[in-house]
Amino acid sequence: MCTWAPDAAMRRAYFADYEAYEDGHAVAWGQAVLTCAAQDDADEVIARLRQQAADRQGVPRAAIRLRSVCRL
Image: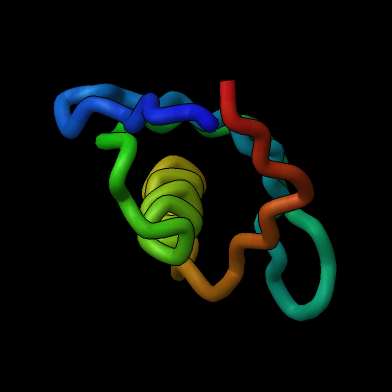
């Protein structure tokens, strides 16, 4: 039995590959990296990655499609 639990101060890093869409067509693509607390919710991590990509590309968050997300 494992009794190890992640420390609240522990950090996790994520890498995402994304595409930005406009009128149903991919108009840009790129990568985003995020470091956050280990206890952060998966939905929050995805939302933050999409927002980071949207800010970078100058499009609404809804226009971003995450192709892949990897925890580093």
